[in-house]
Length: 258
Image (cartoon, rainbow, N blue to C red; front, side, top):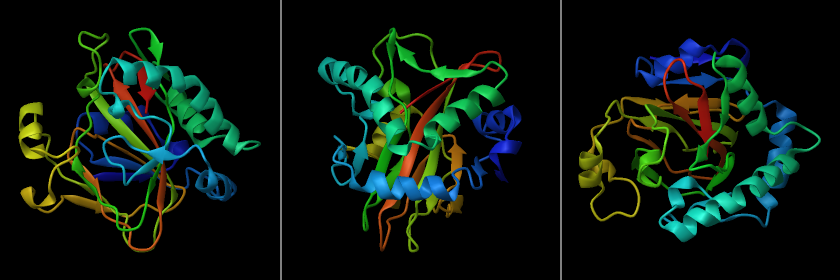
């Protein structure tokens, strides 16, 4: 099952269904209005803030991702940059509201216990990474898990993790989201990953269980502990804003980061 609805109709049960894998995901149609999409294309695509991901240099982003943390130096750098980068991305959308701020408010209003910015060992995280997937670039099958990059013994521990992408620009050819109903444990994931810096090979997997082509302005929420991927774009750059959401139980607040 994949739920299609709107931000106005999103409920806590929709979120819980994805956490508990009763649903592959939730698609919020028209989350970003046309004027916001126009501003995003005009400003994000021409920013000198862009740089390459550490693990996949063919990907370009604005903002340092938590998955890039490899040691204490990169950890300190990530947290030091977080507040300023949040403000810079917010500033790019003025006088309109940033889609990331809209999402933060939506989560806080929808989830009974609210939602807040993740802190790891008392340090605030970044949220709102902008990612640019150029033509011919394949986002290989992978899973996401905060624990791979978090410091040992950090609290509180996640019970589950969700992922959202806000789609600002989608190529006419390619850019489909693929989801497999497979949740490998960490040992199996590392075996499938082998010597790769990131992700696993498609030929090691069966065909995906679900494929969806989002439209510009849509938001998709999924469980990234399930294997997922993005097909290459044939003609233009795929631009998204990405946020992870931490789930700590039905009676605890959500926490978000990038």
